[in-house]
Length: 228
Image 1 (spheres, rainbow, N blue to C red):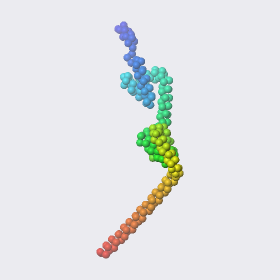
Image 2: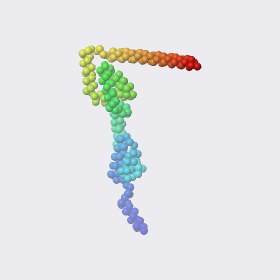
Image 3: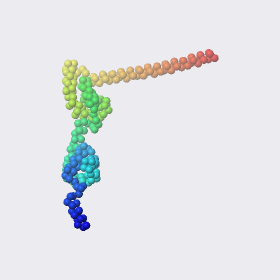
Image 4: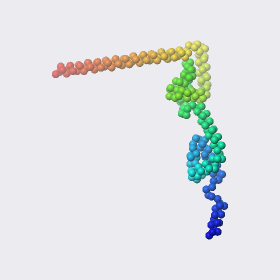
């Protein structure tokens, strides 16, 4: 019996443990961890995916990574995280804030800019109007215009500027920014006056209706008394 036990123990040592890690398993685990780091996910999710791929438990994958592989790939982990931060910063500089931008919003910014050029308005003022219309931050709209919208529509932008310069040569600077602002201010005053007149007319109309209603009530009372 002792000889049989010694033989079985020797056979086990020769064959090796069934749960030992091979180079292929380590490579799969390393690739999964770095894939999740680069995509902004967590190492726990990488261990969950490795659990399915390798047929091992999540804790076993985590133990293998933290006690064996992490020390080997420590420098690569640091470089991957740094490159990820730089990529996120470059994306923020190009697209402004983290909020998503749609093509319709880009078209609205472009339309405000082109209309402003035709009216002689400054770019900053057009961006301010576009930001108010889109309910977004003014600086975010300016970054979006500078880094995305203008490069994508540079031909339309240059054509609008050229058309405005040609009109200034032909007709002079008769529609400068100050004059446009004065015209807009006068229109706003007229709208305000018309609104006041309409409100006054409504109030008079209500008063007249009340007077007529009172007269009708008095007439009805008189008629009832006459009938009695």
